[in-house]
Image 1 (cartoon, protein in one colour):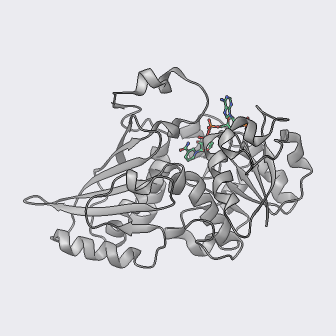
Image 2 (image 1 turned 90 degrees about the vertical axis):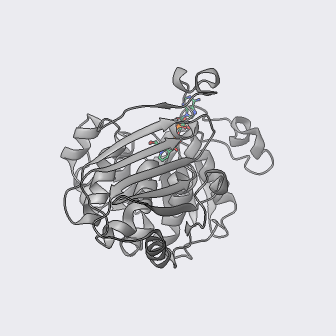
Image 3 (image 1 turned 60 degrees about the vertical axis):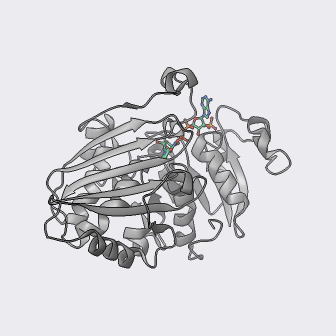
Amino acid sequence: MRTAIWGATGYTGSELVRYLLRHPRAELALLVSESSAGAKFSDVFPGFRGVADLELAPPSELERVEVEVVFCCRAHTEAMEVVPRLLERGIRVVDLSADFRLHSGREYERWYGVRHTAEELLREAVYGLPELYRGQIQGARLVANPGCYPTAAALSIAPLLEEGLADPEGIVIDAKSGVSGAGRKLSLRTHFVEVYGDISPYNPGRTHRHTGEMEQELSKLAGRPVRVTFVPHLMPIDRGILSVAYMRLAEDVSTEELLGIYEKRYAREPFVRVVEGLPHTKNVWGTNFCDVSVRRVEGTDRAVAFAAMDNLGKGASGQAVQNMNLMFGMEETLGLR
Ligand SMILES: NC(=O)c1ccc[n+]([C@@H]2O[C@H](COP(=O)([O-])OP(=O)(O)OC[C@H]3O[C@@H](n4cnc5c(N)ncnc54)[C@H](OP(=O)(O)O)[C@@H]3O)[C@@H](O)[C@H]2O)c1
């Protein structure tokens, strides 16, 4: 399986290199980088010296390369320009940006402020959350790898919405992310001194772009339009997401019953673990696991659902490899455990 990574020197791109190096069926055929073309991958990331010394190729190489799959790890708006040509050449794509996650060009423009230039592909692109769309991902040409916050939110709430146990009105999602979620590009906001010793909310209400994606997926689960109150926070850790969803229960169920429903729902899922205690980001660091749990808030009609995962693992590159495995009919867990 010849693979290419476009945007190999970003956080998701370099994490993909780590996953694909230990994948028994994948070959790193091409690493493309605009900022570091000509250098070796291990010059940019010395930890890979002797392990991944490939020379980084310029983006023009994407036009020529013969590979079976390209992972797009660049910013949104870039993939929609390049992906149509890759597909025409018979190359399959896992796009880690937001370009193909929303199902309509109008929604894309609403959240990303630019017109979609490959709208016809939005109908074909499969939302790459295997726990919900495994059948459609198998054999797909184009998979839109989900955003990190929407992955955590969907996996934590899905069993309740699927069973009709949660009231879809008034769901609150309070989530926290490590700094790598903001990417490797330099910005004052992510400087050590700004972040260390601090926790702060950002883009509250319906202003964070992941809100649209969350609402799209939760609406499908609920079978009716869902609006959420989503407040993300930046945490002083390198990687990890902790998502806590608050919602009203539609029926009188105990914590034990809720946990039983989660156990049953995820019993055959290789990367979702219903944990006995409460999820911790440390327990999923560097992995493709998403740890979930749920509690009834005693004396109220409310439930709290938790998810912890690595934003670069199940929130990005690990999930991208899981999707590649499914797209090509391989064992879903290859290279991930
Ligand atoms: N970070 C996450 O947790 C996460 C999770 C899910 C989805 N995503 C999405 O995945 C895509 C890639 O995200 P990312 O976090 O990998 O972004 P990133 O670290 O900011 O990298 C984006 C691109 O910028 C270039 N780059 C790397 N270091 C740079 C530097 N110091 N200065 C200038 N350019 C640099 C790289 O491209 P070249 O090698 O071509 O120069 C890289 O592919 C985005 O669309 C993002 O929204 C990210």
